[in-house]
Image (cartoon, rainbow, N blue to C red; front, side, top):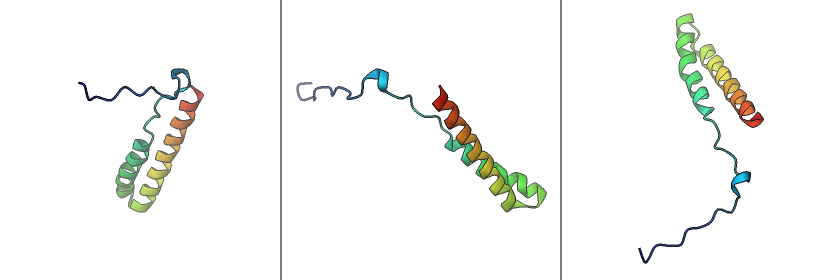
Length: 70
């Protein structure tokens, strides 16, 4: 390994690093998929899509706020 570059030290000290964020986008995607299915059973697909997206976004925001409080 004569040609391998030297390791690059991290510029941010470990005590200042933030943990990786939660995957709140999966809640939005799940709402976009499940919402229309529920809406289809009620005869309102578009309303189900919008409701599912709203619930997913609220869930993602809730996860973000809970992550920041830790």
